[in-house]
Amino acid sequence: MPARAPTPDLAAAARLGALGLDIRARRKALGVSAQAAAEAAGMSRVTWHRIEGGEPSVTMGAYLNALGALGLEIHVAGVVVMPAKAEAPPVPQRIVLADYPQLKRLAWHAPGLTELTPAEALSLYERHWRHLDREALDPRERALLEALARQEGGGRLLV
Image (cartoon, rainbow, N blue to C red; front, side, top):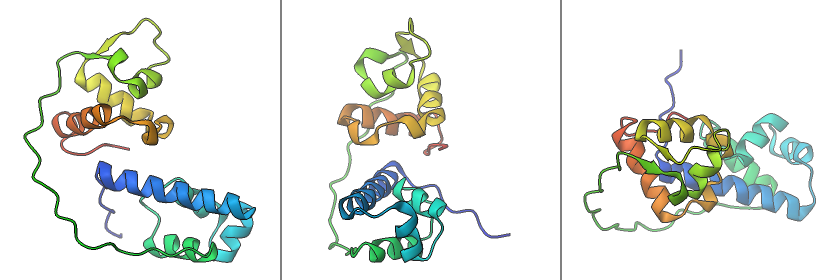
């Protein structure tokens, strides 16, 4: 049985999501159907849609084939030294939905709900990950999500 692929951290998941969106935008700009693009890249339409969705389980080779079929290339940038992060503040005991627009959107099914525990918030993010608009996450909500994953999820999201 093959080894299980490691779960990407939030930053890697965001980059894959952005890459998928870029691939989709290029395909649409060229006026190419998903089926035709998939055939040109030598893969199934389902795999193509998984690539456009930024799924990490798709092989890097498939991503490169998709890019090549659209006339795109990927280049690795030079090494960037990131400053050490300051100790992250702890997650509040009660998370106010009004302060986090994406979390509030995910809690649509409970109209009177105004606050969540950290465990409830993480559960909402994980269960509704496919509905989360990761592009619209503001820095404060992104920091909350990372802190929840670290504190409540053992350092990773189960998505």
